[in-house]
Image 1 (cartoon, rainbow, N blue to C red):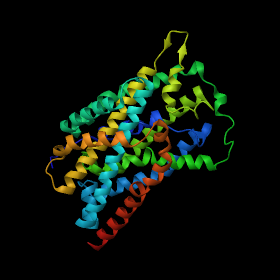
Image 2 (cartoon, rainbow, N blue to C red):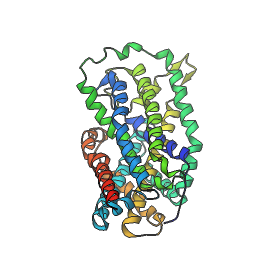
Image 3 (cartoon, rainbow, N blue to C red):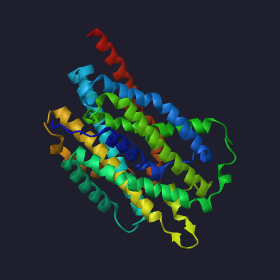
Length: 358
């Protein structure tokens, strides 16, 4: 397979953009309500050892991607079976992201435009970025990332005139249980989803620093999501947030400073769309690499076009409606446990055992 390289700064910026992705649009507040910010802080503590496990696996198998590591530790047969499961998970996650984006675009911007047209456009753009290569995507993401951060920062400043600090009260009204439940949900979406980077983190120039890059990425990404949560609570509060499918868009749409600065929800929609596309592209890269490893192809780009089109096709049949899409989250948080936690722990344990036997 053709060798590609990305820098460590490009790697953690990719993690941040990936985490912003569809999360900034679809963040749920129904569990912990005004205490969502507490749940997010708890999540950062909860996922720290998990991403350290991801980084440790990569550090212990320098130069290998997730699929090569699986075959090295579990043997060719079992390794390929688990690799196939991971390939499907990344493929499914990409289809979920496409559907999230098309739902968001239709509800927020183009209600009369059929979703399949938007999805097809995303699919064609994904094919283009896959053909261009991982290095091109990493450089393009690094170029547009300052714009994303600038827009998010501006919305935080503009929220001040409409901010209602009382929206944070009463704190812990229903105790710690809802906060802990919500923390578990956030740990799977989006933090645990960063396991997708194990598919190509072997391309980083400084391969022995995977744990540090992972931690820096999730902490900075967590900081961005924390600011988004704070902004949304300050503007919408409750029950406004409970009834909102796309809280970030709804919150920013209320910003109106002297009748002069308003309508900036369009810019936020652009930010969410760009970050969401990067997330789709990353999932597509991981899926292509997985298929290439499973079937022994020399280059993952050979399967990029059919895989992207299949991903788009799957996105059409995932949900019956926007509400069905939101309800799926309650199933998703259990569906991903083997991929985000159980398999990585087994990989680390068996990897250590195999190394001690060598």
